[in-house]
Image (cartoon, rainbow, N blue to C red; front, side, top):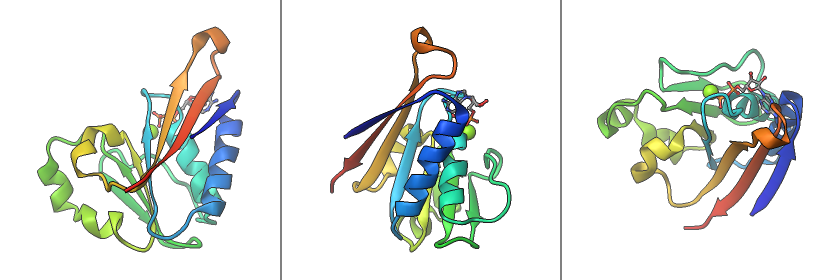
Length: 144
Ligand code: ADP
Ligand code: MG
């Protein structure tokens, strides 16, 4: 387990860049943390680290947004508004989770039951005592 503290959105973005640079095809990164924690900011860094061109925003109305131009495909899920597991079936989530790209899932706790056993779990927490822009980011490899 790795704990990283960031003190600005740019710090979090840079952490994402290094994660994106080191990512391997088929990996799944789950992102959890409150609204405004920095899940999308981290994902934008990951996209940069994968050399994805163009803007990456939260795919709130589509569940998944696919970016094909980088070092490997990026499958960016935001399951905040997911109603039930059937919606995940409809988007064909298994093709993404077990495919050859990097899957990043915002609000992954909401679909805990269908997450791959092997994944990289990333949790972002605020701590207002440490300042408004402080984030504690915990990265743990979940083994099979
Ligand atoms: P989420 O996707 O988790 O809802 P966003 O990435 O969309 O969150 O937004 C995070 C917000 O918090 C942005 O407005 C960003 O500027 C702000 N912020 C402040 N400090 C940080 C930090 N250390 N890391 C990431 N975002 C931060
Ligand atoms: Mg978001």
